[in-house]
Amino acid sequence: MTYLPAAARYESMPYVRCGRSGLRLPKISLGLWQNFGESSTLVNNRALLRTAFDLGITHFDLANNYGPPPGSAELTFGKILKDDLLPYRDELVISTKAGYLMWPGPYGDWGSRKYLLSSLDQSLKRMALDYVDIFYSHRPDPQTPMEETMGALDTAVRSGKALYAGISNYNAEQTRQACRILRELGTPCLIHQPRYNLMDRWVENGLLRVIEEEGIGCIVFSPLAQGLLTNRYLEGTPADSRIGSGSAFLKPEQLTEKKLRQSRALNEIALARGQSLAQFAISWIFRQPQVTTVLIGASKPQQIKELCLSVGQSLPTEEELAQIQKIFAEG
Ligand code: NDP
Image (cartoon, rainbow, N blue to C red; front, side, top):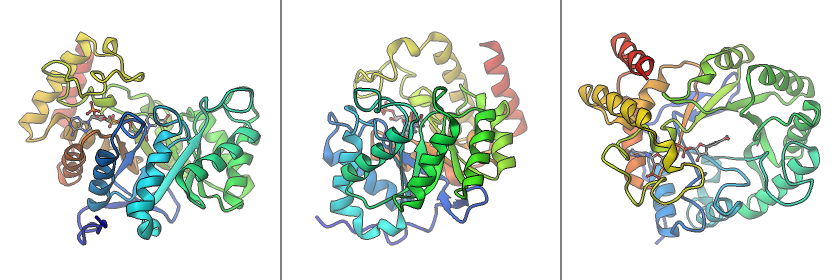
């Protein structure tokens, strides 16, 4: 059936300026790292993307290697885009990345100009797009001069195959350097994509300050620690969960007793303030002014609906922040 997006889709989602750029991103964005590969169903994938767009999520984040297998998430996205979302292309911000292993041999990994630019061409082909909105270096490459990797991002933008350049998983010092090189090339860095959640706060140790000083945006990934910061595992491991379905990226051994204890204690705070644990985990991130948008993953449309409600909910109080500190100090 022809998809007609919700007429009210721009009424409740706030859009936040991405650093000093002219681009505004929804407070919640959707990533296609998991759940869009070959073992997912097109019916569910279509429902996830439609639900997101209907709720005002205009930003979809991909990478060359998302699947599994690598490349399949871009193929799925390309198909649904063609069927449903292409009339709305100018209402969408679509990103992709290169930086992790994608094809065999010396040119299918890391940060060379050779790899980044051929990978971007492959991604565009898989998604049947003329351009992506944001092209990222997925991780810093210690063996390649930063000038070469940033030069490839600059070329991607100048060639019209990407509108903006971004970096992911760069530390504070590498971010400073990347921003300087991109500025000198005349293609300012738009955005940084680091991991950030209640269980992994490394960005607070310098990176957020650099992001603010450089005037770039920040899109944080795995805000729910891949599901550990939700009610998913509080009563056991459901078969349809990321762990239960055998994901290579979240193994049963990562669900430690300590993490479960922390999640249960956080869940008590969330329930007391009328939120689900997942919503509380998102509200906790919203307190950081440097964060432009929170990049969620989802396996069910209902999860996206629930997370979008956190946009209108209150930020944690000082007292709740102190409770959180105590939970993690106790271990
Ligand atoms: P999250 O931490 O948001 O985890 C998503 C998982 O949490 C879902 O698959 C689901 O688990 C569970 N979940 C979501 N909403 C709810 C809810 N309301 N109630 C209960 N459980 C819920 O994010 P991801 O780890 O998936 O990462 C998000 C995106 O970040 C990726 O798609 C990708 O775009 C990006 N990313 C970037 C990386 C980088 O290096 N730049 C690395 C990793 C991710 P379940 O499947 O069990 O239902």
